[in-house]
Length: 107
Image 1 (cartoon, rainbow, N blue to C red):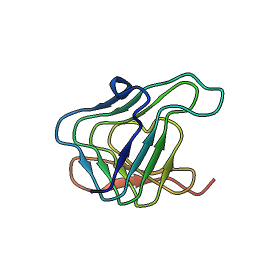
Image 2 (image 1 turned 180 degrees about the vertical axis):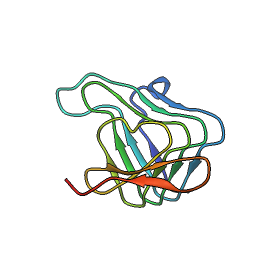
Image 3 (image 1 turned 90 degrees about the horizontal axis):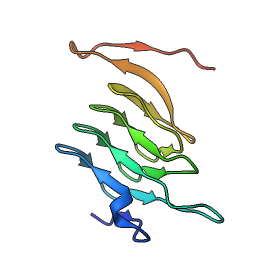
């Protein structure tokens, strides 16, 4: 699927069960003058095509059943049951069981 998982410390990238990672996603756990930090993708999350996840100085997690839009740049943690997209990614909707969700206004 032409994805890249940072090979500097593979144990720092944790992908739980039933996660969908689309074509061309990148995961980086380190940067210039930065220690290796964790990326955790929780159960049932979905990452759209060419999403990028950068752990930064404190690590990031993508919440259970959250949706990350195509080409998003995730630089901070996304809560459970949310939809996020953009550069940088921001939460735009909180998903609920019925498939409807609360939409967040532009800020």
